Image 1 (cartoon, one colour):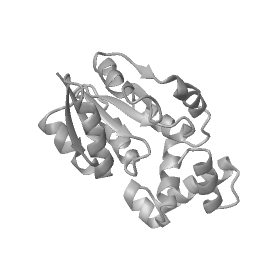
Image 2 (spheres, one colour; image 1 turned 30 degrees about the vertical axis):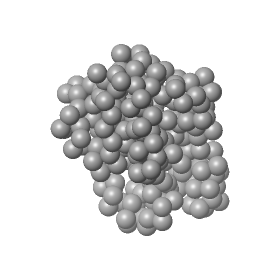
Image 3 (cartoon, one colour; image 1 turned 120 degrees about the horizontal axis):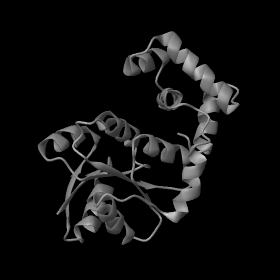
Image 4 (cartoon, helix red, strand yellow; image 1 turned 180 degrees about the vertical axis):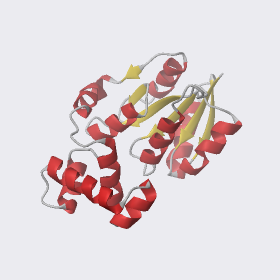
Length: 201
């Protein structure tokens, strides 16, 4: 029996995906939002953590998975639902150690098949996502610059971003300046706009 922890912020989509996965009798599905991930993993470590990169909380979920990627890790593999036109999302998933990439606009039955394949130690990238994943390596912003820019896109001030990331305000300003320069933006808002257009945010 393969245990799947499905993480999604939207309860309706979470329930729908759980229903789809539960059609496979070899999968035992648990669901939560980002706030319940750590407790769920401590209570019953899952074989697969499945999340949607379009989910509002996906960055936090990927960050949590990165923090768990250590020798003492429980062996959970990350599988993501993604879009081929969002290279930045694919890069963040790759940095978090994702082993399965499912096109969320692809065949429905593919989801259970990929989950089982990754649980058995394999890897999977839907063909429709392969080019986007290659493009992901061309993202000019570092993970830290992307994180700072993402928080700025949510309306956070420099001091607030500094508190969240445990950085000095001057360091945050340097990251923002670097992001503006690398994106070719005129200012912070333009850098955010361009980053969203390219699928980096």
